[in-house]
Length: 405
Image (cartoon, rainbow, N blue to C red; front, side, top):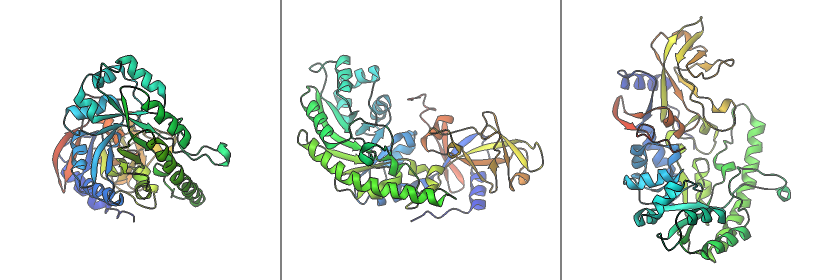
């Protein structure tokens, strides 16, 4: 079921009125859309808890707001230092770090505090990562540390000659998962409590790219085949790991695959985050599209020629392959587009299209970011819009003085 696109003229007027006293550039989150997305994501999880992917939010206030929504539980952090901070701040007492930690100072902090050790789960896919922890503080001189095994969820058809998905864990087949679980079980000072398998080729790839019907059909074909293969392999891997450990959770999925992943009997919880903000990369999904909730505004500073308006700033480009899909998109007023020769600029961004001649010096142009939490790396606060007013200004991680990556 697709979201109902808001009326662009009404949305622009509402955002302009709410932020009339602010000077661009700034970012806002429409709480009405954010809350609707949080509820919709929980419903799509079909009764399984949704663990919040904090990298896609990067604002303590909004992380806590989402976690207060029925169906949400726990955080999937992107660094260990961030996880420790969220626990110390009281945001959560259940954090899984989604990527292996190599931060020695953060590992030392974790290993010196029983409360943190009970709240934080480390991600592993190699015994060498356990060696690193032991080198920081040896077992017997620290509390037992919780670990989660990262199972590679990519699809490798044609006898492994193709690799469809991201390059994450080296642990791909159930036998390797069982062997790593046995290695953890034999190591003092560690307890294996979870397994994670993130199917990026399903959760992170839109299946309806605009104007590219054949590509969309090919993506859907790959996703169906990958899903069927992963259902069997993930189940076998969970069984192999459970021969050596009592698993508390099996995590999978993301915003783009929430309903499908939650239907997997081997999965006990799903993860999501980007769907709360609704960035442009999720406009290309057929099954469900979040309502856009996060925007940033830039001011028109120049009118260099008829049919053009130039805003100050605007070059808030997303990570990933260096292609057009990673550029921010001007959305309000309607009828604007980036200029191909300049794109989204570091200091200025020229815009053209039918909406350009309606703009005056000082007017706001509203953009959407291609990704979700990366927007928060550009601003110190997110202005939370409630109807037609700014209800509060919520500090981002950057605004609180933290740059975790």
